[in-house]
Image (cartoon, rainbow, N blue to C red; front, side, top):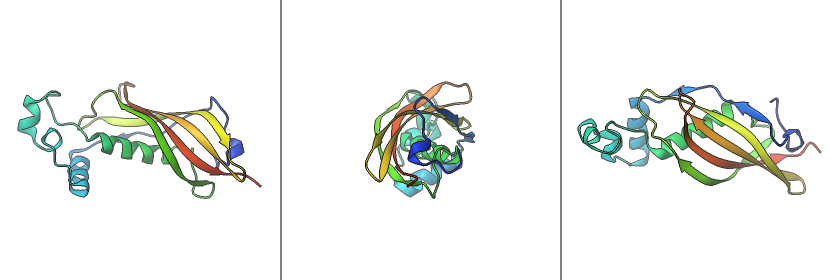
Length: 147
C-alpha cells in the first residue's frame, strides 16, 4: 500500500510482510534490554530439560518483531499513520525457536470513524517458516483521513 489513509483500508484486504529469522543474538539483546533473563530463553542446559526442550524467544520479543514486520509490509506509513492505538486478544500459540523465520499475515477487519481521523482494526497472524500460527492478535492503528 502506498501511504494508506483511513479511507484506503478495505475490510477483508490482506497483505503479507517479508520474513525475519530470529537469532540467538536477538534473544540475548532482548534479555539485556528488558532485564528478562528467564532461563527458558537464555540457558541452554536448563531449557533442554524444560517444557519446550530448547531455548525459545520471549513472547514479547515475538510481538515486538511482528509489529516491525507489520510496518515493513506497507500497511502503515509515516505520513498517514498517526500511531499505534492498541492491541486486543494477543495469544501465543506455538514457541518461536532460535532459527525460526517469522512473518505476519495481516487482514483488515474493520474501521471506526473518529471525525478527522479513524481507527483501523488489523488481524495480525504471526506465522513461522512452516506457515504455522505462532501468535495472533488484533492491532489497532490510528490513521489520518485524506481531508
